[in-house]
Length: 117
Image 1: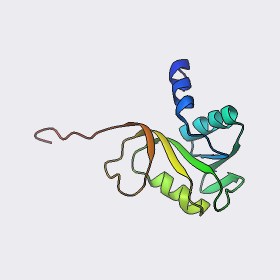
Image 2: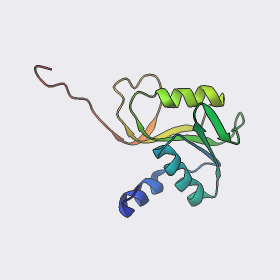
Image 3: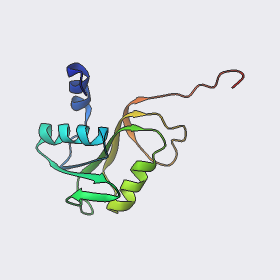
């Protein structure tokens, strides 16, 4: 998010919602950019706690992280919040197992197995 062009690219692709919940550290920065861009509510998950308001059932909210590697931090956040988001958004989805969570991403890393490994 330090490069102006990439920052604007990410911001332009964040889905619009009434509330954003960010996961430290990159997800918090991205969620804050969405909040400023869309004049929305904001919360964050940190150290196993939700800081800020809790989105209610049926509320239009999006969970945001920068990179999904295993999806565990997203699962922990969902368990803590107890209310399903409209969408889970990450910039890069690099999970090998994509069956646990339905995640929207700007980029996906395809894992390629090389010979001998």
